[in-house]
Image (cartoon, rainbow, N blue to C red; front, side, top):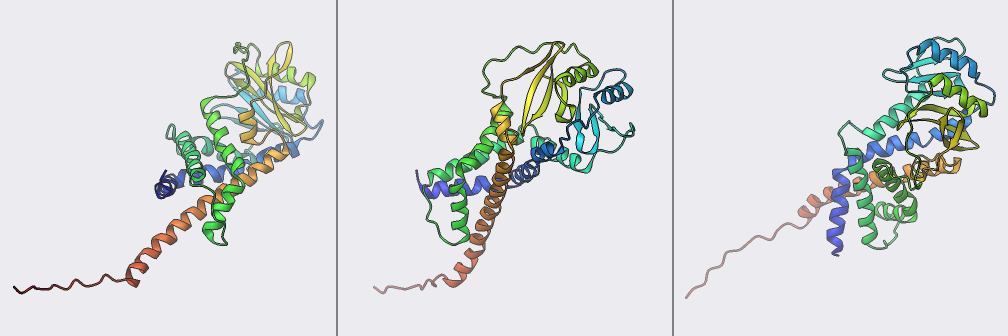
Length: 306
């Protein structure tokens, strides 16, 4: 395929989607730090299950909350719903959401929904993959100590990582888990308070990230080591769900290494986007200078005599 055509496609797709990609990458960079903070927040024995159950019954007597999240580092729980309820475990009073948790919540909502236009996140992510594929089709670059050389070198040397991130994002958007067949969702027959008690029988609540109803099932996300595992909650206890590798890889929750890798991926993607726009800007600014440096030759009319 014509390399000049590929270059134009690479450039203009990047420019058209520059703003949504910038938002996705920056919010992704913020979210890259969330798994590390979740693991660091675990304080064994720091959450009293009976206290949590009592507060859930106090603030959600009608059982309308769809779940809760736990932040053991600051002794805080959030009853999930519209609107949610923020509760301080020490005082039992309604309080504000912790600043860091609020930042992560804003970043997640923005990362997944952008400005609320349906499908924009998926389309932008597909555009990101397309940009990378076009870059591959243009062939191996000549590495030079220029802005363009660094742009191409960074893209090629980190290609597997930066390609994995949007591909797993597309899988999440399309609901692809590659986890094989899973049991059909069963009606959630447990109340939130009962679900907390079931989880607390086998796990320290300080390791529990969230408990809630998802897809017709009660699920718990529990930090084991430095991995965030998902469990189905039934009256008989917990059963581990197959690992959703697209989610684990995309969110970096499979390991602390995964979280740090996501930080690197986000930084590289941000650098590629910014340098790509700068390269285009520099070329646009050079064109008028070239036109002045090489003025058009005047056309001299000549006459022929017969």
